[in-house]
Length: 90
Image (cartoon, rainbow, N blue to C red):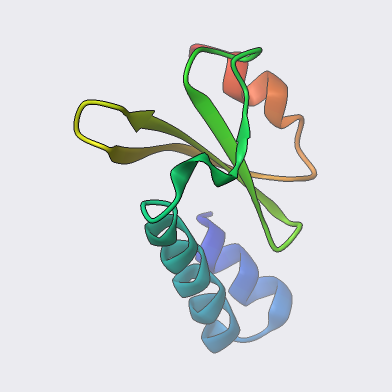
């Protein structure tokens, strides 16, 4: 089950789920404006940053210094052990 389906099921509203997903997309796009605003997590792997979205999701990303591009590597629910998820190469 993907995130939108899960939110729709739990909230009882596909509209709420879509708004939440739209918010995550907008937040991820906004990272390109000032990508270093988040926590750098070189302890997990080099050039990794993590940002908290609404206290429920951790957005992991890298910054390509050559192209000044943000690459989202993962979005993990904050209830999960995101450090383990992000440091696991599989």
